Length: 379
Ligand SMILES: *Cc1c(COP(=O)(O)O)cnc(C)c1O
Image 1 (tube, protein in one colour):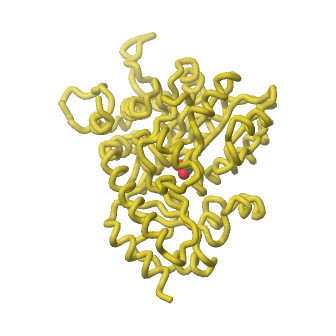
Image 2 (cartoon, rainbow, N blue to C red; image 1 turned 90 degrees about the horizontal axis):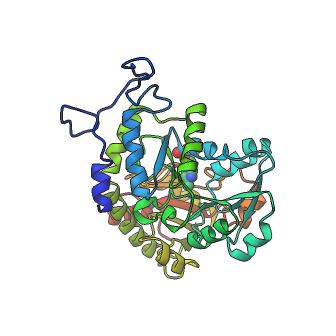
């Protein structure tokens, strides 16, 4: 079945005898048992709820996994995946990561005795240097955040599987519509579903998707034990959102391409970080492993004053954290998503006062360009 059909029809399960086309919201915390030692398959909504189960089956199918777990946020998903590891374990992570993941690793995960090494170049030679007998996993986000660096997922998977390491890939920026890391050899895919999967800037959620049954069992045990589950109503909102995922991604990435090309010709914009530009350093990897380039663009302007002027003057584009929704949003990574990273470290990565990150929505590209044009101002 084609991707866009799965988006609309989700999973095969039907829970309703009325023929309702929309999946019912099972707003129930608990489920009555037909008899002693008997269950309808549902006992308590922390463990499973029919509305959430429908959503999870749909997301598993879209990512090419055997199981997906729906969380109350993306960070809840990352945090639960970290529960797979024990004190003394070592994880190698790419360094172009969502700031919240870095904060989790540096804080609670480090306090639990897990050690992290961050790699700038995520190639076989650097990985071989970083790996130790305690290494248990590789954690990547590609394209990275906010510098849009792309990692070769299949190469990372090959390195990981040869050494018995788990490859965990945050696929938030691309969604399974454009990139399916499990099919390239990753073991766990993570999503901030708050972003493209929800797509309307109105609901928080997260996912962890796996293909291996043993891994699914371990995560399911932790999930019902810790309890970071997505509520039935929010699950329903996500089911509704997924129906238009393919359409939204197409519209957003088509707009992003137009904006990136416009930026290249704009004198006040000094650098454009978008994987779809042929001079992007990992353009060839993107072509190989993804069916598109997404709709996230980071760009560097001539001065911090220009950056501040853009943020204060945009009218249509909203100056707000987050990404992936139908509304275009612009952020200042230095002060928002990556504010907790020490200044020197941040600036060597290029996250300075001149860097802005734009999440391109589905408005008319001409209107978005006109908005940026007036915000940058004439000279
Ligand atoms: C937003 C984001 C997260 C965290 O997800 P929340 O839903 O905000 O908790 C994780 N990874 C990436 C790439 C993100 O953009």
